[in-house]
Length: 130
Ligand code: THU
Image (cartoon, rainbow, N blue to C red; front, top):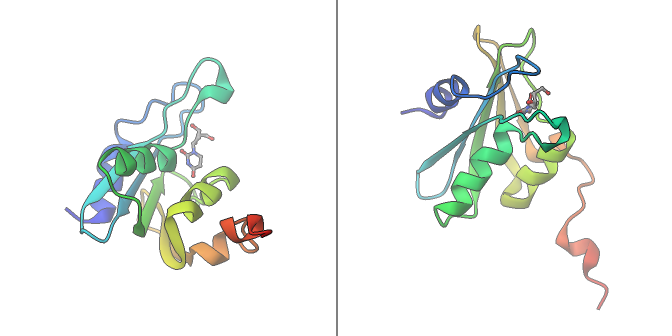
């Protein structure tokens, strides 16, 4: 299954009764495996989680820690950009040149690197004060 197909399929399972905005995300790792996640909302709104967070959790649960490619899809007029928090979450496991494809369900796509999504990212290097 392609990354795009995995993201499109998992999006169908999104739990988004409050926003009605279903999002699917899929990640590839160096092993070639694909991990997918969807947004999971909650009646206590801030407790909801994004699709990217779900996909990252699935990757970590499977014992992998490196993202080589990611794909995010939603039924939006323009390719859906990861939120600020998800940009930081992706950056934790993806090098700066990793490509993120943002997509709409009707076929528009835009590809962006992790560095362009989160320029000036806070990284471990910033805590290197020794
Ligand atoms: N959402 C994601 O899952 N990923 C994104 O990249 C953008 C936003 C979700 C969060 C919430 O459930 C809904 O979309 C509306 O904000």
